[in-house]
Image 1 (tube, rainbow, N blue to C red):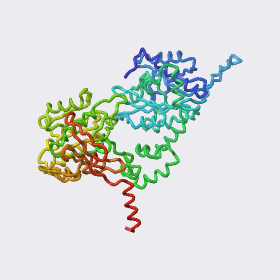
Image 2 (tube, rainbow, N blue to C red; image 1 turned 180 degrees about the vertical axis):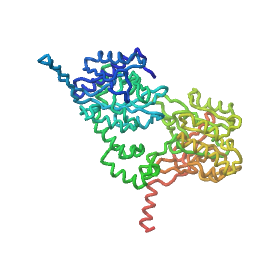
Image 3 (tube, rainbow, N blue to C red; image 1 turned 90 degrees about the horizontal axis):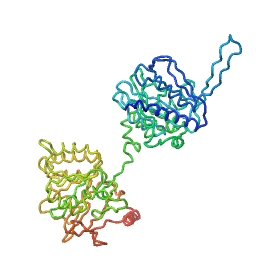
Image 4 (cartoon, rainbow, N blue to C red; image 1 turned 60 degrees about the horizontal axis):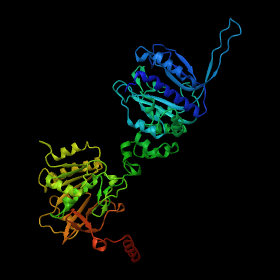
Length: 564
């Protein structure tokens, strides 16, 4: 976005005053310089060779010079660059004799309170978010240059230092400038050492570039007048060796972002880390799949319902008719789609407290059998205050010629889906539920969604006609249709009636036991008024109990003692 012409003076004043405060924070006083190059590469100017020195009290005069030569942005003009290095001044003296020339003022570079770099996206190059991420992670600030219609035309970069930075031999930069450019890794060598002021457009050999607002470098609201300058500079000042080390590691890891992210910025670790990279023939994809450094190595299961319903996986609820499986699935969606008050206790589902902090976003309920009258009646029971604002209902008609799998791909555009319920599975198959190919196609679509959106996908499925399971594990062999219904879900929850009670337990569980999966079968009484399952207390509520850790260890010790 183009900075308004009438705001340019205030934008420049804010930036120059801010930079002086950064210098003063490390004890530097002196002069900075505004200038144009003597040549027209890489910056074009109507008036080459301009030089204007100014001190901390001369900001207004400096801004006046910039605005004058800028010509309100109308070409041809001369957009002044800034040399941010602080210089000391040795004043020239008038010659003693009339035939001698005056001595010139001598400005000597002494340092800077920050490092900077300019990285422009040239030609058709597009700014990569990874560049900004690397810079912010080491304590530098960066935001985008604009060029024409593009607001991602490179980065303006600055890093405040906790000590005065020495000037380098080029006279244009200080320690850390080159390293910031290296970490950004945007190929624009000819522009790297220059400091381009915000609010004005620079005509270059590669087009017209502008960084609209200096304050956009920093977190929103960080600059609120002059009083905030010192606070921001002090809180964000870093030792520039951190930047130097980051650049060294970035180059050592051959500019591979994945290696840099995995290995970090300690130069002492480079040799050891590269040994592992060499073991996989320096192939980044192979390295990403290797050992404890592999992609997603730290990923663990998250749960919508701890111990029962994991995110990023498919859970199947299998039960005979009349057990209340649809009501239970519908209730789960309603509870997950409510916005709870601060401090409000999370509700329970099948005896487990719902992880409401994992339930952000849109919850989706596919109801293939129950129409709006039943859905609405149940919703009034589960949610009498009408708080389930994030619940989306879907039926079976997705538009002419649109299959379930195609509709699932359409739903990928929803940013966050914590849970999706499909009730029942057979209503969304494209053919016979006994056909392994048909069922596999169904699972491919929902597994892809579960993984891509990190969503808990729950499928409601019927048992074979006349099935009468006596335990949750028996439910697994009584599921209707293809073996795929058994093989593909990561978790299968079995439900069945035992006289007046409903029993719920895991029929299948492919999740490591250390994640707290519910291992017992729980006995519930059904409350017909609110369609809820009430877990019976004490021993009455647990139908079968697995051996405890102590009992298992006792058996293992007995086996060791007997030599088995």
